[in-house]
Length: 196
Image 1 (tube, rainbow, N blue to C red):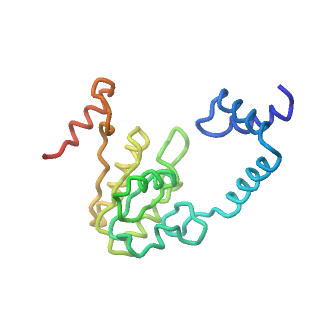
Image 2: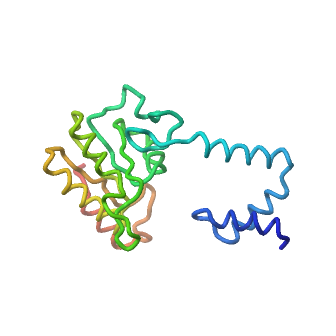
Image 3: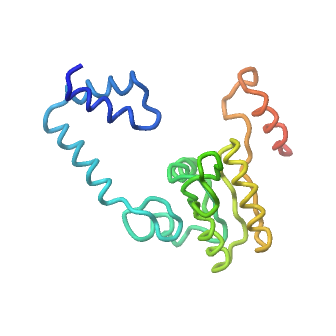
C-alpha cells in the first residue's frame, strides 16, 4: 500500500468500531473522491472539532454554553436521565418519549481502567439535585458490569438527598425473537415485566 493511503487507513483504524476492512474501504473511498469533496470533508471535521463544546449544565455536546435540550423551557427539569456519553442522549432522543433533561457522566466507573467517581460528573449531578426541584433521577447506563456498578453507586450517592432513583428496564428489543435472546436478556425481560 502506498504511504499516503496507508496514513489515511491508519487514521481510520483509530476510530472506535472501525475494523481493518472498513478502514481500508474508507481510505480507498477517500482517494476516489474529488479534491473538493475531500476538502469539504476535512473542513467539516475541523469545524466540528473547533465549534463543539460541552454543555455547562448537563455535559452533553453543544455549540453554545447550554445544549439545545437544556435551553428548551418545555423540558421537565424535575426529571434527570443520567447517561454515560453524549451519544446516549442522541439514542434516547430518537425514541421521542422522554421529556425531561439529561446529565452526561462522561464515562463509567471502571477500577481496571483507573476511572474513579472523582473522574465522572457525579459532584455536578449532586449539585443539580441540591439546586433544583428534582424529583426523579433515571439511571440509563449500559447493562454491563461497569454500567451496573455505576448505577448502584449513583443510587447510594443520591439516596440521602431524598430523590427517587430509578433504573431503565432491560430486556428484549422490539421485534426480537426469544430463541435468539441470551439468558441474561430473557431474565431481565421477565424481571421487568409489567401488567397488561
